Image (tube, rainbow, N blue to C red; front, side, top):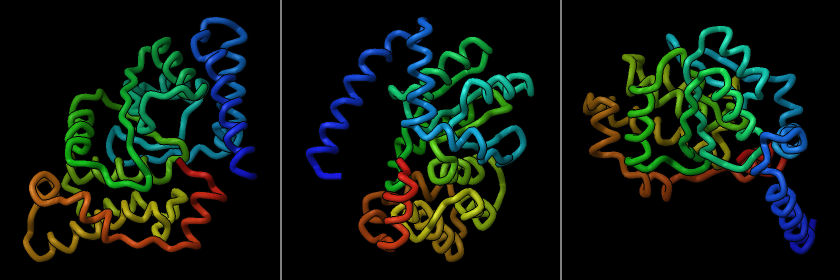
Length: 238
């Protein structure tokens, strides 16, 4: 698709969304939100593949839930949902927000990135959310592969005594995470800590809050072009 065609399509999409994002209480608004979720946000794929997995006691990870999944979580006694995509205008988010409010689940939002390491302030924000949110807790991104993976690993390293080798398993092909691509920078962060801890014995909490250099790690990481093409172009990860 040419640049002009992409630009035209993007403008049309923005105009279409402006016409319904504020009308979630109407049948038309909800219908368009479902269309946006299922078609443009790839919800049709998630309807048959949930990527739902247990991380630790009371903590689970998944791809973007739809209202039906949130209903099932509520019936299972879940109390909180942590949205790693941040507050946004996708129909899937608006439907998620509405479903959580109706079913009594707390929804918290934080914007994580799949190809960029979190800044220290964002790790602190995530750490505080892990401590505050009532369990059982579901954390999710779009595909449940990269941002859900690093957030799950951070939960284990900050709030349990799981060793880093075990926490690193949250970033694996089992969840469709590909470490050779640009998203592999997330693995690089944990690999770096593992090497430092082997030499010094420093805890992850101490390392990430006193020694971790997000910019330096980002600058030194090198991704595979082939893996990046798969993740960016074929799978179209956020």
